[in-house]
Image (cartoon, rainbow, N blue to C red):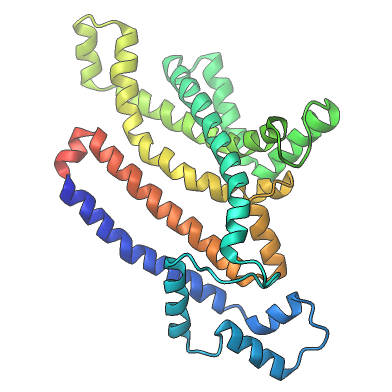
Amino acid sequence: MKRYVIRRLLMAIPLLIAISFICYLFINLIPSNAAEVALRVQQTPLITDEMIAEMEEKLGLNKPFLIRYFNWLTGCLRGDFGVSYVNPTRTVSGELLRSMPATLQLAGASFIIVILLSIPVGVLCAVYKDSFFDVIMRAFIFISTAMPSYWIGLLLMWLISVKLKLLPTNGNGTIRHLILPAITVALSYIATYIRLIRNNMLENMKQDYVLYANVRGIPQKAILVKHILKNSMHTCIVAMGMSIPQLISGTIVVENVFSWPGLGTLCISSIFNRDYPVIQIYVLLIGVLFVLFNLIFDVLQTVSDPRLRKDS
């Protein structure tokens, strides 16, 4: 098991380097001069070639590409992500730390909603297969999967906030501000995991060990919880682990719909302002989160499943 974990860690290192290189490469392929963009963002009235050359030297853009990438990568490893083009007095790390708590709060609340609703509903859909409840839930899965998150957010805002006047439409600071954006982010993931848990449980119900457990006279509740649900959740561990970075990255649209001051709002404003250092670090952060959580929950699944532990 230790060798498996070490091997997975070693495999993650070149993957992270490749992600950082692709991220840096794509930003540098944008057909515009980053030094000129920085001057325009800072509202410089008259931009000359000398000013552009001076800004290139200040930002290190006059060096070869690989040297600039190496300097940027070593800076990232030290926690130095550069400065914002919009406000040179602010560092990129400072901007991330300012916006991160709001995004983590939204993603955490959404993840809790997903867990609390998807597991019991998925179990009930499997136990009462083809019942009225199962048909209604499958229709909900189809509709919520087809609807984009921003449209769900606008509908909830119109119904709950405008018509019923129960919750605020935007901002943050209280639980009431958190409810609508958290439900909006969670809805599409709830539908995914209801379908996943339902299908896994139906597949496990056909296995021989369920028949043998019934023959032995084990209570149906014990068979359902200790055997069918337990074995069904093995395949959901990695998927649920991967939903954490998906929730963090998926808030980018919802945060702008509800004016939630998180990483998504920061990223969108950086795109409009062409604040390249912030965009680079945001993309790199999401990529690192995907690799990290995939590694963690893959190891956890291997630990929890004896068959995978034996294969590893």
